[in-house]
Amino acid sequence: MLISYKHECFIRTLEGSVLYNPFSITNNLEGFEELYTKITSCDDNEIKVRLEATRHYSYNILGFLLSKELPTFVLIPLQTL
Image (cartoon, rainbow, N blue to C red):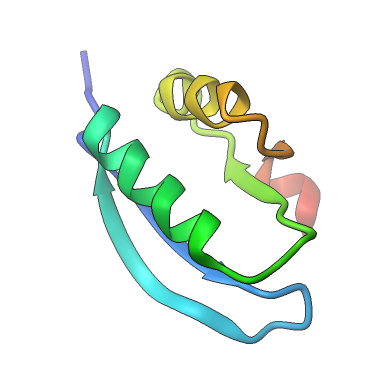
């Protein structure tokens, strides 16, 4: 069984300004908390989190973000072209 040990992330505004260049987080609670801290440090009232659908690899981070009541959307890459 393949296990994803990390997630690749970046944070930008809706207008496209990069707030955090691409970075990696571990696929565990510590990594999720790091991402949450960065997301909530942004001065933006309209936070929207988008995750790439990666089968079961994204379930834990999705559950974490939803438990923090962040508006979170799972995107299928082929449908976003």
